[in-house]
Length: 265
Ligand SMILES: NC(=O)c1ccc[n+]([C@@H]2O[C@H](COP(=O)([O-])OP(=O)(O)OC[C@H]3O[C@@H](n4cnc5c(N)ncnc54)[C@H](OP(=O)(O)O)[C@@H]3O)[C@@H](O)[C@H]2O)c1
Image 1 (tube, rainbow, N blue to C red):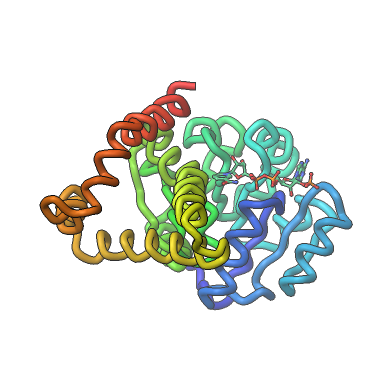
Image 2 (spheres, helix red, strand yellow):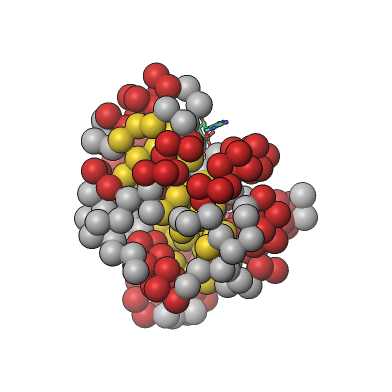
């Protein structure tokens, strides 16, 4: 049975997403830097990224996989087969997690050896500060002990949610692409405040804290967002004027269309 106090976790590919996850694991305290390792393509970049975190760097994906108990596939989706196929015999005895977009259970079955314990996941970048989301495919080949370990590991990064394969693309779009939309909203709010004299740094701080606070309030209370909006809109007041302006500009349909455009790409 996997013991997260001693388990070794290796990333195959150590770019933006793998770095964000490593930062979250270390920050949360669920894993120490010494339990983390990685292999990648450019050795100089890998050496810098791993050394700055106190992690181990490996010359090859095979070396990293041999060392690890848990292997996280974190290369671009089109490289998964190329990276995994040559080392599938090593991966047979590991717990294999993939973060590659659109690489679901059936795809991994096609590249891994029969009987390999694997799970497809979709993390988002706020995992680096333990306020992220890791969406996991309900269908997997983990043991119940593995699943418990994964829930603990990803729970340390924020919300860990298991969903059916058919909603992985849409749920993953919301959680994975959403940080870009949220960042655009933060920037736009700040631009509006800067236009009226708020200094830029203060405007970003205010916009981000307001968004984080509203999100935390919704998560804590479970309130319908419409109820939360109504609570701020007093009759004949100022907020409803802004709400009407956003509706006129089509904010809601713009956001829905953004999700539509990605899911139906
Ligand atoms: N970024 C996100 O928000 C996000 C969200 C959900 C899921 N994902 C998934 O996360 C995965 C990684 O995305 P990313 O944004 O982190 O990409 P990235 O920053 O480009 O990182 C990819 C990593 O793979 C390495 N790599 C390339 N070819 C390799 C090879 N043959 N063997 C070993 N390593 C190799 C790269 O090394 P070099 O830099 O040296 O080439 C780099 O470290 C993707 O599958 C993506 O779908 C990303």
